[in-house]
Length: 239
Image: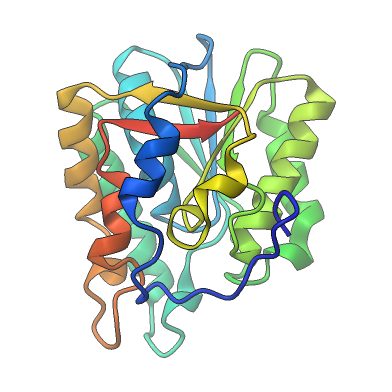
């Protein structure tokens, strides 16, 4: 349940919430940027960090600030029949980060099984706590995103951020697709504006995730109408 709204199972192949509905909510949102210092981006699966915060990662690294990706799973459950998908998705992430920025971005893997993050929440918490230094800003999935891995990562990060008293920004991924914007109107939102260079870098980086955009079999995990939510000239975060 998110803000009193029961989340229903969703199918990425469905048309989902029109982007025009989200633009009505987001057009008046205040500008936001993290405080200067290390940026710790938690991602349930390889591609979530680029979808939700790729422009921020690109901009932050270009500004000479430290960026670390906490890569929680290798995303192998998106196509269980495909052997070696974990290695493929890890390579996709490395390739994407090289296109996001020429500056090194650290990747720390927890190697938690895809789809089972909830069963390993303590292990995840220990990893997040290690990087939740007083100078850091934590960036994590929205804790009511509708996917169990996303929600566990989001909730754990929220708990750690509160305990460590550091800022937390939450990025939606599947929320854009299956949620009515009216249900989230009361949340505190912030917009991180992207330069033209950051927009181009993010678009190129997203193309690296071919296993999700153009899988060898079956429908795309991230079809074109879902990808459209991540082509805005800004990234929106719940603060």
